[in-house]
Image (tube, helix red, strand yellow):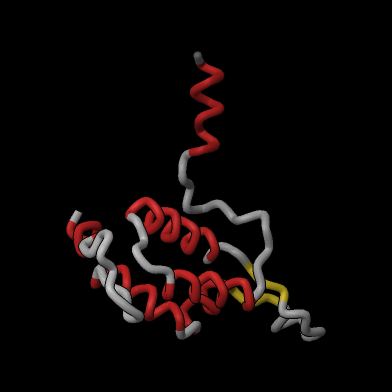
Length: 115
């Protein structure tokens, strides 16, 4: 039973992990756009989204520039500067979508915030 417990540790959320799959600015923009426009987001999905966004902030992106000072850019900077992020946050915290109504679980954000 000791091995099973150790094996289960890989499924525990660890905010310090760095994703193996590299992302670029287009990937981040696409991810946030889908979140902003996707209707009726479930609480479980919001949990996975928030976990993913946290892990994305641990990544460094290669900008492809030859200048050694600017070759690394943090995904946190790209996330914060992306205009879709505000729509995602408003959708989560208000429990509604700025692009329509969220009738499936209208109190997800406020309930999670209160909890």
